[in-house]
Amino acid sequence: MPTLYHHPLCPHSRFVRLILAEYGIETTLIEERAAERRREFLLLDPAGRTPVLVDDDDSVVSGAMVIAEYLEETTDPEPSRPRLLPRTPRTRAETRRLTEWFNLKFFEEVTNWLVTEKVYKRFLAPEIGGGAPDMDLLRVARANIRPHMRYIGYLTAARNWLAGETLSFADFAAAAHLSCADYLGDVPWDEYETVKHWYQRIKSRPAFRPLLSDRAVGTMPAPRYADLDF
Image (cartoon, rainbow, N blue to C red):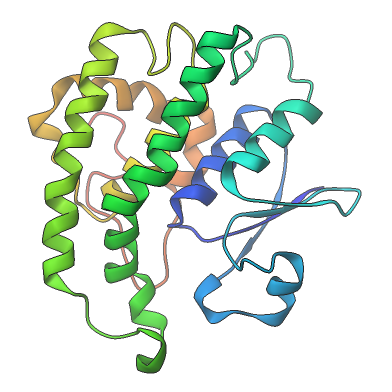
């Protein structure tokens, strides 16, 4: 059984977990606090970032999109499970573009600040960045989420799913990041009904259920986090 080194509120880990679950791949999860720079973890991935997948043959694959494409190339899903990287070059390029948008741009502008300030810093020593959350950074992250919500709304108004007519990596990347912000109570759902309806479609999928039962040590989820009809 493959092993995934992850953190419950690492959005990149959540993205990979969603792909694994969507493709029906059972995985052993090992929680990793990457900021602690544990030697055994660094031997797997010198970059020291989650997620890291160790396959059954001991192959080590690191990085969210690298793992996703590795799974796409090495997994033969059941006929009832569509491929999450579309076949046509144009839609495949759009899927990759949007997946990168959320895993890089959304992360740098929103989820990195929210999760770092509210969760990670609580468990770090002061000399390596631990301490109380920086409220200015949290205010910036909460302001930054709104343009992204408008963009998701624009995409979902024009398409069946974010990258086109079929569910893809792009939807799971966006949902993974939003789920972290939602866990922390920082998504203004009431202002973006179109986005809310799209997220409900993702949130109701069986692959999402394990994420809804996640609990980060010392941080409880927002009251409606696990509610499908929120």
